[in-house]
Image (cartoon, rainbow, N blue to C red):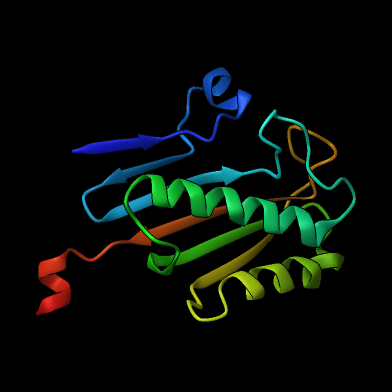
Length: 134
């Protein structure tokens, strides 16, 4: 059974995508931009805070599909300025210190909104309780 999650982003309906989708034990979270609840860009110019905001949205999306952030097995961080990767890496490290998912940093030319410095994707595997017991 497939489940879908929304973050309320105005782009979800416009592009026809879900913030996150769950199929069985797997959750995939779409490229997540640093948006405020009203759809504005959060923390313009601050890559660390924008990355943190993306990760907060991702965490909420995972939890809305009955997963937990500790289930994250892979993240992808897309940056418009690779020279600033350490700011995004610090935010990722602060957020995933104990989880340590596989992670990639990918340079891109730009995003839909020129004020976005980062987008983040995540994949999760939520082991069923029977697997955890065995």
